[in-house]
Image (tube, rainbow, N blue to C red):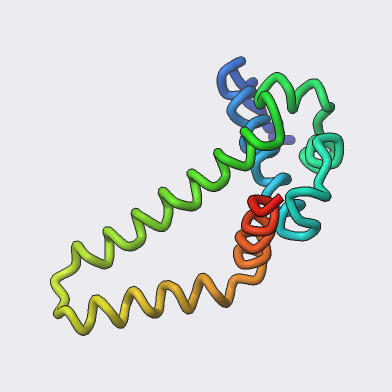
Length: 124
């Protein structure tokens, strides 16, 4: 007997959320690789597998997308630090865990080049 895999059709809301996520992921990678200034909306859309129109149906501009990415990075950092602070640790242990967290971030080349690209972009 052959088993047929049935894929659930996404709702309009799910499809839009998936498109938005793919655009954000593509933008992060392209911003990290090429810098924010050099990245084009067309390149971001193409890397995500969508058209320029799909980009503009989700974001008003490259800057809006960039701000959302930065907000997400900040929120994730806040959650990570809050989790460290919520533990039953001594002050010394907390400082050590926070240091380890930032050392880990510094070893993530894509994160570092993204953040450097954002800093350079903000200077223009």
